Amino acid sequence: MIRVMIAEDQGMMRDALALLLDMEDDIEIVAQTGDGETITDVARRVRPDVVLLDVEMPGRSGLDAVGELSRDGAVVLVVTTFARAGYLRRAMESGAAGFLVKDGPVEDLAAAIRRAVAGERIVDPALAAEALNAGPSPLTGREREVLAAALDGAAIADLAARLHLSESTVRNHLSSAIGKTHTRNRIEAARLARDNGWL
Image 1: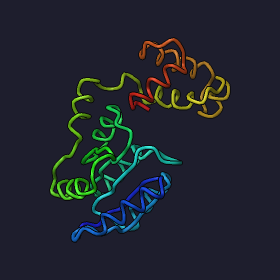
Image 2: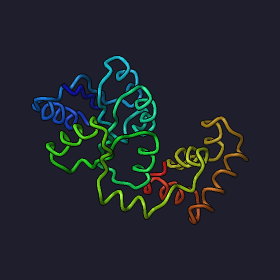
Image 3: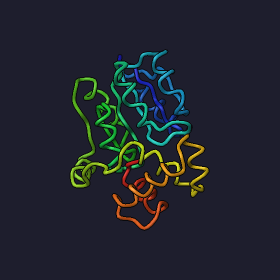
Image 4: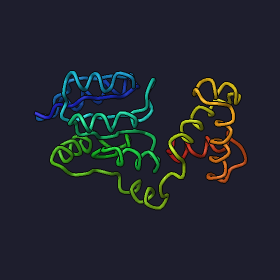
C-alpha cells in the first residue's frame, strides 16, 4: 500500500480527494491537515510515503514545507490551482517529485502518485514549458520576504517592526526589488512577484 497524506486547506477538496483516493486498491490515506503550520509535524508522526501538498495554506505556504518533507523521506507532489511558473521552479528546486494542477481527473492523480513512488518526476507539460521560458526569480530571499510583507500596503515602519529590520534596510530591499521587477512602486513589485510565483 502507498501511504498518502493530504495537506490542503479547503476542507471539501481535502475530503473529496481522500475519499476518491481511498477507493484505489493500492492507496491508503493516513493523514490530512488543513493548516500549513502542522504539515511537517503530522508527516513526522505518520511517516507517509507521499504527501499531496497545496501551495497556499494558512500559517505557512506548502512550498516552504517541501524541503523538510523531502529530507524526511516523503515523496512530495504539489497539487494546486495556482499554475505559476515560479511556484513550479521553487517546488522542484526544494525537492518536490511533481507539480500538478488540480483541474485533472483523480485517476491521473492516482497514476501520478504511483509514478512518483517509482522514482519519476511528474510535471504538468504546459506549466513546465512556461517555467523554462520565465526563467528564475531575480529576487533574493530577503527581497522576497520584504515584498511578501508589503503586499498588504503596510507602512515602512510597520514592515520594519514586523520583519525585525531597520527602516533603511526595508527601503533598500524594496528599492532593489522594484528595480529588478521593472515596476513603479512596491505594491506593483509585490503583485508582480506574487503573480509570477516568486513569493
